[in-house]
Length: 94
Image (cartoon, rainbow, N blue to C red; front, side, top):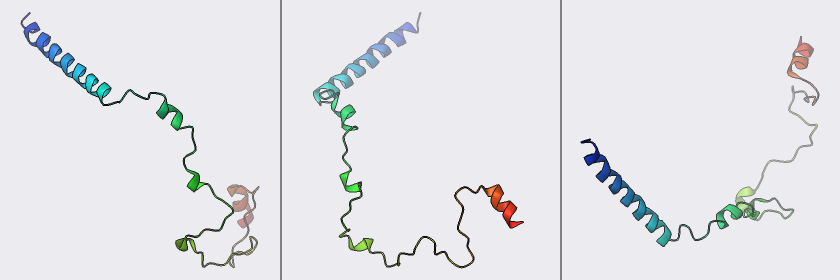
């Protein structure tokens, strides 16, 4: 019974704090637009990341390495077969 003298004031204090935090959230506009953030994820806002056919004007994107044809590999390497599994390659090497 004596614990009630501690728990009742403590629960009233916690309820008061919760109500004050809720009032602050409402007054500061936290609940003004509930659907906007949920719909904003659907819009494409990263147009700068989509590749285009235009050449880049960024000087740091300058590639000084020449483009090699896909069949030219460095000496001693073989072209990987797309249908080949690692066990097939192991059988070939032995």
